[in-house]
Image (cartoon, rainbow, N blue to C red; front, top):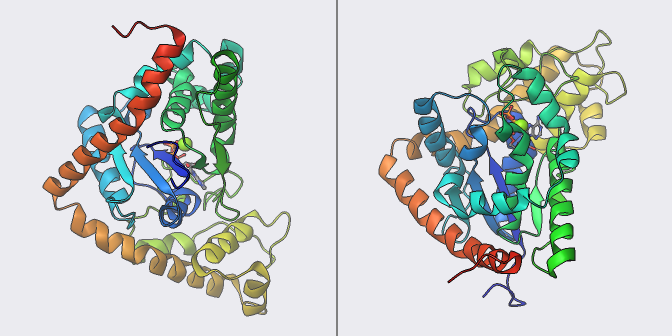
Length: 335
Ligand code: ATP
Ligand code: MG
């Protein structure tokens, strides 16, 4: 049952199948997903409905959705005790999103900075879905009564909107939704581009040298780190104005567990060449187990389909309870 005291706290997070995840997605989100799956009741999904907000070839979307699901299954998330699913396989998300649209103000949705950024990037296709994206995201979270949502810093504003919608609805109809809390890992919340360390590393960046893909080979990873933009000081220390080195230190720290002070003392008197090589090696080691499992799982299409089916069944079971409650509260006649 949903409200028994012994139920573990619930965590929800989704990732769009827009491309193979980057090291930023991994350190900012996926790595935390793995850790949290040990302690919480976790629901993780592939956000294929969200991916429709920008133009994507149908065949590409289909194959990337399977690849992303395989990627989640490679994270050692224990799909028996947690739920791993594809968003469009669970109809409650879109249905709740419609109802929540009617409890979201146009003005507050207009303030979302990601909408403004993406509208600029896709000026020829500023569709209503792009605008409505955060309301669907609110439905994704609220439909499972999630307590925590692990996100990178870029999603903080969207989570705030989900909280406001939940509070507003609860205020009108009485306690209906759990108001979710963001879970932002202290380090890795914002991994920056290797070519422009003032902007975030992103899956959809057109410059392949700017980001490391989770599936890059060791050679490619080494090459990308060697050509990472740094500064001319040649001193490995975390300081204002050293965005490139700060970013590399963050990545190194996430992969090795070393503090910035330890890194500074380990690399005292050494040049950036040595440091970049060490960062690349740490990343290669960090990604190795995921890459090995992924290579095995992606070949087994039947297993991927089977996991998608059982994940969707479990997700539907949990989310339907909330949807029914909401439908009843707003006055939809249930016959
Ligand atoms: P897109 O460019 O398609 O939006 P994205 O790289 O921003 O891709 P999303 O699918 O939007 O990826 O986000 C997946 C998760 O990764 C989210 O939790 C997001 O906060 C996190 N994330 C995205 N980029 C970074 C980054 N550079 N550093 C840390 N976390 C990140
Ligand atoms: Mg994004």
